[in-house]
Image (cartoon, rainbow, N blue to C red; front, side):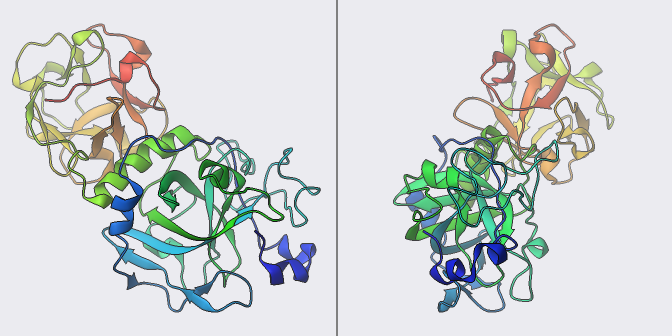
Length: 355
């Protein structure tokens, strides 16, 4: 579905307004249901200085709301097809196609709207500036339509007076007609944006799903994210335990795999805030890094996302700050193997059993 008045304005003007992204698409398989998420959006604390329209020239009826630690709005869905030229998205399939997006991939390329589920937010104005609410390119979004949930990222910015637009791939994942000429839906479509989250790299959709399931469960008030509080060993590949090297509680001490021995260096408390604590300190991603291979250490607990972890249904431990998984380096179970973060996968070196 294209906004009628926008189409009449002509493709040349629209190319400056519509920017979008793409790279890999899949729907959510875990996390809270659509009804659980929607139940948390029934009360609106409006944070926008005014309201947005579905279409250019239409009535401004859509407020941007805040609540339960997230930002959300309910609108329609128009199809954005900008970015990388593909069979689905190009000048022939979309009169208003523009070969760039507001946010780029890790290799500084436009996003691929045909492959990557992403959402378009209005460009910052005095009405609402998403940047003031901990939102930026790569922030995780739960998109809800027809009792379905899919996870996407903030991938582009668009016109300043309208709201409710997402990539070709987002539409496909929700069973919505993705044709940029006549697709989309009048909705209702609810978009829940989670501040202070960032998928890295932005084009890695599996990371968006893992992180999305985690923060959406927290938003919905679930009891499994963070995991139920307990104290004991965390076991991984080869039956080895997550261990603090030398039982040393100094900041920066390496966290590794080691034979389970029942010592306090292997006794981890799962905090209700998502932290994992041992010897009075927290499991921490060094320097709050987000790159694959960033090592895990022990550090003073500080409540940052670098110290928050969630166990998902696949037995991964997902770090909130990076959206990546706790990983035993080199798929090794040898004593002394350092732990790190890495893009979430299905390997046994990313499977963990909590106390």
